[in-house]
Length: 196
Image 1 (cartoon, rainbow, N blue to C red):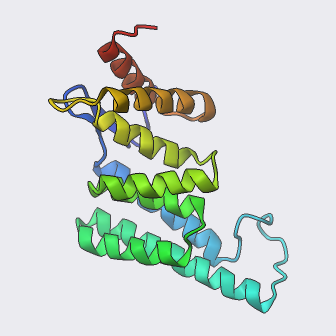
Image 2: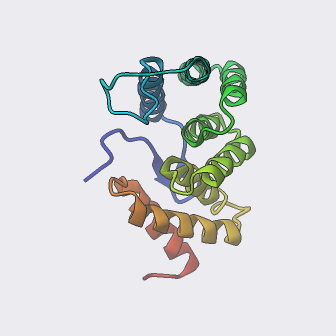
């Protein structure tokens, strides 16, 4: 079975490719759905349709969260239009509004990786995992970044080991792990001589 979204591809020479039209669209869709849920007042703590009883502080926090996700959506749209600087500004605003949101940080890390801003993407993904050790999207970003440092003339064996560890974690924890994770893991292991 192949990844229905075609969100990532892998090349033995270059490692995983982070940018494709489908992956940008998938991230923009994911961010938009998250923002819509927040804007509708469902922050994930109550079932959809449950009465929302809010204090003034909760309403203010909900508005701030909605604003953060609106900036995240704008960043995704800017990425899809090839406007990297605009996307980075929007992401900065989103993160400044919700610096403790692991989901927002992981989605932001994914967008930054697509922009080629690897150090920033890694920083956000690691912060997301500090806040929520089960944040699968952050693990994917870190695995892809480590794999990209594992190939080519400046291949980093430590990065390869980290990529293998992270892809193995994804293969266990992500029940909907796309097939390319297995392909990437196999290529990484073949490169190290580990055929198990």
